[in-house]
Length: 280
Image (cartoon, rainbow, N blue to C red; front, side):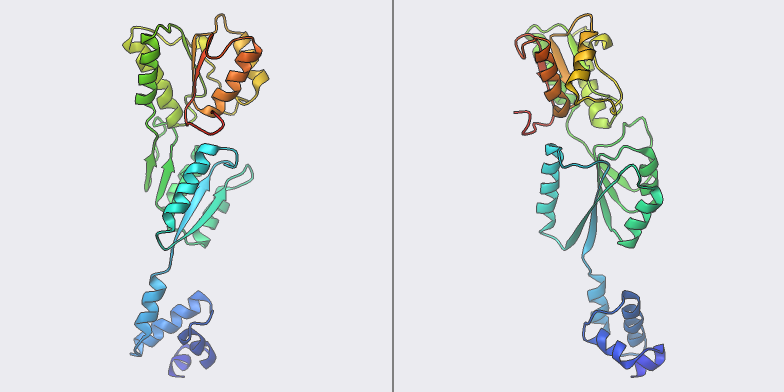
């Protein structure tokens, strides 16, 4: 009753807090704080329980991932890992109508403790999310030529060395003409795969001929076989080897080559990246 009188709330409200019933968080904080101030025992334990609430982790994605087998594997790994810890897991996918303010309100209303970002390459959203200050780990990122400031880290695939080794092996086996398919500026991973091929050719005193590449921006229809066929048909010479930024590009490229009566891999070899189920 003394706590209720001091706060100007009902005795019933204080009773609910003491017995663990559902009350607004702000009300609970006021009751617990006042009880501690008045010297009542046991309320420090309630406060400690409040402070040990589950951490809230947000998976923030720049596009729907339902058809991207590689990222689904990562999400399954995250979900498996957090089962060992006291973590609530949320997911939010940006769309063309999502505003920066909507995103910020979502993160702040849920009191998100940490973010995992996938396919987040829009600088407008990135700067806004980093400005909020919530720790974030990006899986792949914008190219390093775009400086970002904030509380973040990046997990990258080992792209340069893997592509470099494969390209050098193919050169040693006699391949002489190479092309790259994908937008090197789409993300750091794509850029590093492009660098791996270019570095291997440079090491072997060869040059990557961009006329044998398809380097259109990533919003181009790389999944459209007919579009790829047109790009291939305009090449003076189709190279012996195509390195693709990922499997999602390598699969339709292989189909486009076949429709142009090129045998894969006898006439043209195609290298993907990600080792997805579909690539098999």
